[in-house]
Length: 127
Image (cartoon, rainbow, N blue to C red; front, side):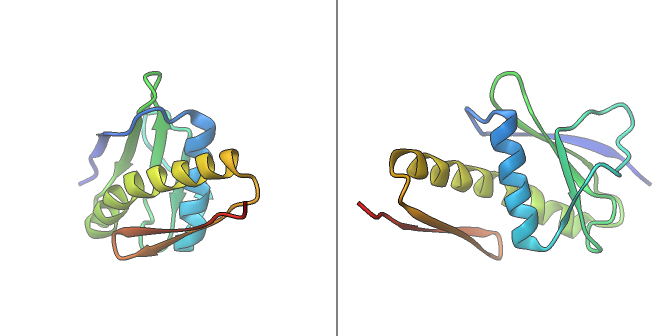
């Protein structure tokens, strides 16, 4: 049975533009597609992604307080839904850190890599 849930993530100072860019990068890293074709009833979202492993999709929205919420239906895909729900906060924070590094040093090179539910950040500062 479908059940739409909302998870509030313990993230701070995440605006809509940063969230969208981070989720696009996460989707690219995982081989997921960005979509607007998910049904969440009356729940709004800023960006969503799905794959064959996550056919119901998973959506994200930035809150007015600078936080992030995950909105989705885990029915029939609970394992992958939970994996993405655990991975997303780390990835968003890591993405934010790479953007801060690039803003402070535009010549820096960054790379995010996912291993299981861990996000690895490689940073090369060219000063």
